[in-house]
Length: 440
Image 1 (tube, rainbow, N blue to C red):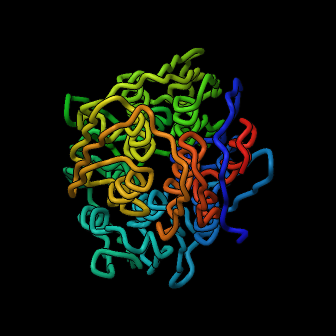
Image 2 (cartoon, rainbow, N blue to C red):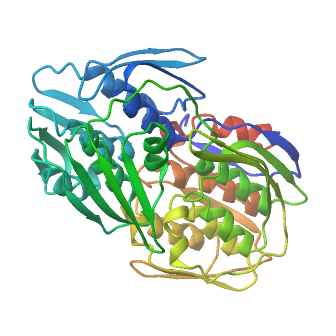
């Protein structure tokens, strides 16, 4: 029973200020780029989740020296392709799609066989989306019908490529960008709109990148073989982790919350735009730019009068990890909300669009779901007085945490399995929730 939690009381009104751990996307990208720098890079507020720890462990197996303690992480890079490779290395990415899809970009220049594997959930996900473009550089990839394990044998004579990224996936785009770093010549990428953390770091580090933005696509050119200087980075707060507390506050009674130093990169704030359209009160203060990333303090207030939304698919990529939470807000809205072109949700740790529909049905909210859309019939008076069990969700950390938020705001007696799933992205989640007064 240790891996199961029980919630039978709604959270009481609160007025608090909290600090949340570092951004997962930036933590992983910092570690990967620091491994290619020449010299020692230092990070503070690095997220100590399983995904980031697996990143550090993979880099260690590739011969990178890493010193880690509670205050900071030091990575001693040996330059581009400076890995010290042994014969047939096996790397375990655990549950991290970001790690498993970005790291191969750094390995297309190796000439020894490397295998990347993952857990049960990650092994169900599509890896053709990165192996096919990376093969164009000259590397050889073998997959299990497009799934893990992924076998890589690189090339000593990589050539720059032209790549059209069609899915709006920052992981696919970033993998090609990392491969371009150590490729002589100019790699050109046409990419659908997605998160631009990699572009921001490349620009900050002067890595020969040029970006032209249009309404629907970004055009990226990378001139490879630039020396990466070591760099220090205090990782800002993760907006995806903050989102659980934003929605918890929005759906609670008479509550206010301040979340400090949140990464509000414009390609990540889809949830803020969507929730504001639905009537959630969110104010951003103390805005500034750090290492190319915009950060600020979020001030959220609860609101008992929420509006439905016909959500523009243009906002999907900037809110892709937060839709389960957005569905909870739609459940409480006064009317019918519509969300479209969300097939990518079913390519996550679990089929999240399907799980979102299932969770809504469990709390008595009518919804109609297709392979890429959902229509949600909100109920402003939603309050539960029944038993609800959440299990068998492929240990998807976001399904677990969304269920906790639902239990705390909608009432009922909840039994939620696989508590340890939060170690993937947000190990202190339950501790932070309890700081706000939740009884779990």
